[in-house]
Length: 345
Ligand code: AMP
Ligand code: MG
Image (spheres, helix red, strand yellow):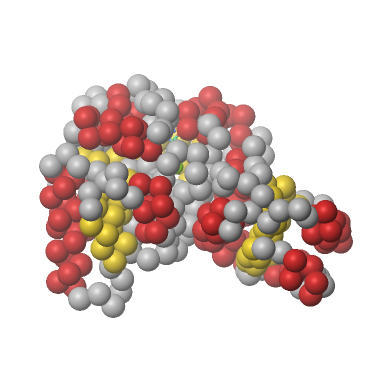
């Protein structure tokens, strides 16, 4: 088992060697974990149904939860779909490479293993250059869900992949922390009107700019997704400890934190934004076993990027309860809240 760290400072020759080894393994029917800008992926050659089936076995993933097919270019996307629409072209030109997955009628050559038996396929061009080089060198589209044990928080660093899959796959390519940190947005373009199936790295506000009249991605989207996106019905993204979401007025949030600290009998974690952290008295902060503060930045960018790593950090400290602060549901806040609510189910 090989774990290779590659970053901007790495000698390009080593980069090439590692990615070529990954490409060789994919061609040989092996599974390879690799960095993307969203979360780490666990890849298999899409044309090798047996390798794709092994993804489900290694992750413990339910078989009806289809895989996203990663391609190196817009041209390669055409190999996996049966037809390409005007809306697909517009979205691909605007958001690829990047965290937007398009659901389209599948090329019949794509195995049922990949699509969960359905007649559509999910496809995207990842933004991370290492992911695109790996796919290009493998010479095949790569089916890849997140590289974690199903149900656990998604991996945003190579050591998260190691935690879950160490010893089970031959290669983990370490490209550092994932910049976006939440999964791709899944947009269904197989029906008459575009439907948001999962909020993610491309925001609903950005999508609306190119898809005029696109439906709201508010909380009601959940009901539609369960029927249309099989994966959304499962418990997801969950750390071991239960999560309590702090969603009241600012002073109520602080009261809840203080009450939890006072009642505390086991390790307690708090994930919150700067504004709330600034309201906590020092004795409260000291009593917390894990405190992760996300910047109050524009669009919940840091909260989204660091949520999964923070949940895993709580697990490592054996936290028994996680208090996690709600964000606005705009921009990346929609994905942040979706993951938090799923994790807390
Ligand atoms: P993951 O790879 O773990 O991030 O999960 C992939 C997500 O994409 C899941 O929520 C799937 O349900 C969704 N997905 C993949 N393929 C399709 C498809 N053909 N139709 C609808 N949703 C899909
Ligand atoms: Mg996943």
